[in-house]
Length: 262
Image (cartoon, rainbow, N blue to C red; front, side, top):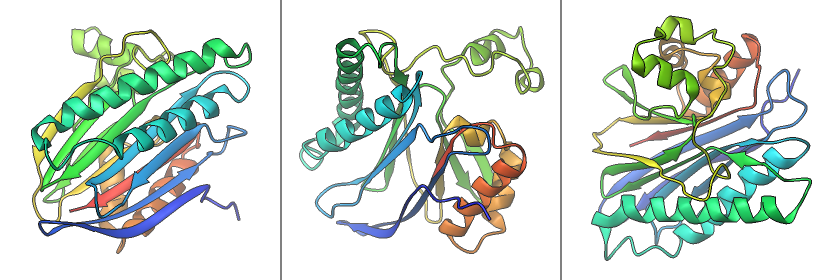
């Protein structure tokens, strides 16, 4: 039997003011790719808000793996120095600033090495602070909110296909099998200027946030993701089921998922 877990973190995390967050994460190379170029990071330090990061690397040889790991490691370190306690209203600005700095790091590393020239990575940073969810992202890694047995996509893909759908020149159904559905229009390492998109909302008890790379979202639709969650009695089992089902349907790409329960 194929081992699914490449990276695995599972814990219950508590922060002041009665915020109680449970999470689980799983990453797998899938059934086609030789290596896993996804990376993820979780900050569960009681002195900080809960932070969850996903990155999907792009580039030849080892470059995708290098880019995603570099971006995640840099962001984790930078976020530990953010003034969350004194400036909670600036959380989105702060994590956007971290992503922009991570973009500079990826560009610098690409320019320093011919082997890594042209590498890049998507990035999604999610912070849960004082009962609120904050998300900043670039690329097609996604954030979903599951509330009252209903799922909604919080982020909008930065992709060629999403632009066509938004313009009305392509239907959502046509986009699912379009040959250019993997083309990204915004990511770390693509240009010197990075403009992340942001989202924030108040969380309710029992809300579940699903973060994933496109290796999962390209294989499973919203209803299939919901079915995995509703049929699992723990977040970790739900992560396993999501990855297994993505692989059963072809596992065409690396897939990473983080599930967070409020």
